[in-house]
Picture (cartoon, rainbow, N blue to C red):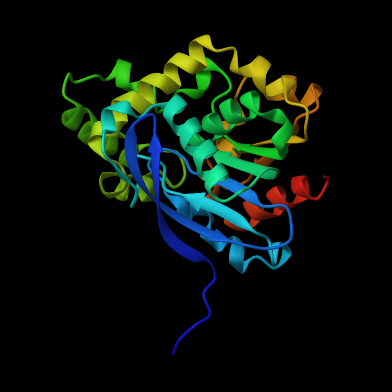
Length: 269
């Protein structure tokens, strides 16, 4: 029995600073303001595919894609991938689909990518849901392992990273770890993690986040309620969305509430 397509899947060829990409994209068109989704390290575009099953997002256009080095996207030079490269990829995707104004949602690595994109082009963005994206040095609990547990060999490091993640107490860590080896190219790990740490330590991310001129939401799992800056960003006008029964991965632990909070912020615009 056939079913109507929930979204369009395609490969989009792009060239980012001389690096050839074949980007795996899912998207849906429509008359409303589109949403650009950016997934986290070790995740894929499918984190957001179930937007089409949410009644409150009926007819909502969106774009989600596998970041270079992840999922089904093919990248000719994995060594070139870092957060700056991922920002340029997002800009190229928006240009390809002819999108000028959009809502932005990013998780973890995607949240940091979204923040750097928003800092460069704030006039294009209607709202930003940052799902535990890096805005302070303390957020590098995954990426800083590239320094704290460096094995000198990226394959060994990634193997050990997966094992540590599998045994971590954070909700959904084992589920997340189970597919890491299949979703991330080893050659992309170091560039992504080192750039995340560098930006978190040196790029005044908090100032950038608080200066954004549109509605912002910071979504976090209840197990990360200890983050030192939560009260501060709330006082500065950022909406907080705490997800119960959840750690770093609301799309795995509590997706229904994740979608509810995303819709709540976008509905204020």
